[in-house]
Length: 542
Ligand code: AMP
Image 1 (tube, rainbow, N blue to C red):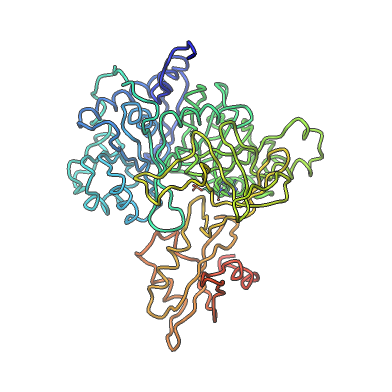
Image 2 (cartoon, rainbow, N blue to C red; image 1 turned 120 degrees about the vertical axis):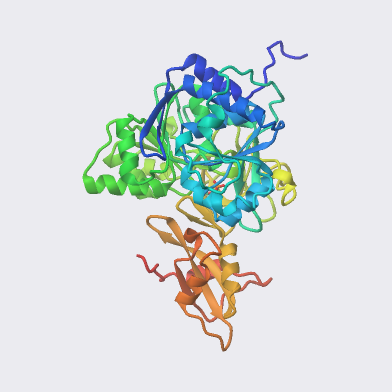
């Protein structure tokens, strides 16, 4: 017997329809690339998202065609979030921090048809447009009079000229909620990047669960600042959860420095902010040096890499802000766990509460977790045993776009590549990464990519890249190098060798010459041993 409830597909268009009807006056505030502060409402965003849908129809895009963005967090990007997915196309958020070669490769792999970019990124577009063979339409996210005449990019139009004159009314198409809505590439550890392809259903369910009180606790009374970029896993789903709850949205645009972020928090009465540790480190340093205090910020979700204890303490004890430590992945939309206390923890001493808060947290509804040993046997939730962390749930990938890399699942579970413990209360703590990828400023650096460039130098016999702790960037790569017998290369020559081969921030901070790199039984580099050998090493910048 079937239930007798109305059947309505869970579509992203319903979010902006809801926000318009129930929170039409809800504010969306953006610091723009132009430098000014722009103010609009959900009502206006909804109207302009419908104009985007019309404009896309006008380009004769098919259902599921990819529309790429290369953009900061801002209202135009938000309009594209709803207009692209709502009209049945797939929003592909490109990461501008990647090297132009990687961007071109990804745009071609995704078969992007349209590419919408902030003017900040015009130099990247100029570098890649001739190589992006599938892109037919280039849209600059600016007013018509801000478009330079001589870009050389064929058919380049301004966003405002492209969508501005379209009709305000549009009937969102109804289709299967399992249809693809958006995609995001993850650089992973080996080979080419792979894309997570989200669906309307997965996005809505993730937004529901992410907004719950023991997750991000979002409501119509919140003013939300997603510092986490909209080009990285949909800004942790915040644009969707905000539309679902009617929360005010505040976008930082390109200004990620501590001073700009602090000013925005104060001027827009932000109650809830989200970002990676690096961003908060810069803001706390600014606040400390200028002796500033928050007047409205209540809580901040910190994830992407492990949140240092000093940061939790500073937010909590000095500024009265609750830190929600969270963990997730591109492949998980991204929310997996959020660290909120249970009733039993409330009477604990500050030190004991801190021990809980340091963990990555409890699985939110919809995410099931387990840890397993090398043989795949499930390990106990005792807070001591650690093993490979596997997850399953409706917003976790079943496979990568175009089946890249084969099936990633093991008996229906997705192996996260993280190693973790889970305690009897269900709090998960990451102890290590099973892969050796380096996290710098919230972004991945593939150690293999860094090694491959060094190994291409004629004087290098072997190279191993490892991450070194850095107070600002979390980690910075260094490269340990074994020279070929009889060959010579200096530190400076090798670092110069990286120029033009990878993005600047992916170039290692230092070269350490060693006699040998420890190898395991099967000839694989043993980076744990290398780290041990270099335990007294200090980065040149520290
Ligand atoms: P990404 O797909 O780029 O979002 O990266 C996901 C990976 O970042 C995870 O598999 C973890 O290794 C790492 N990560 C994310 N959040 C945390 C956290 N709170 N603590 C430690 N590592 C984290």
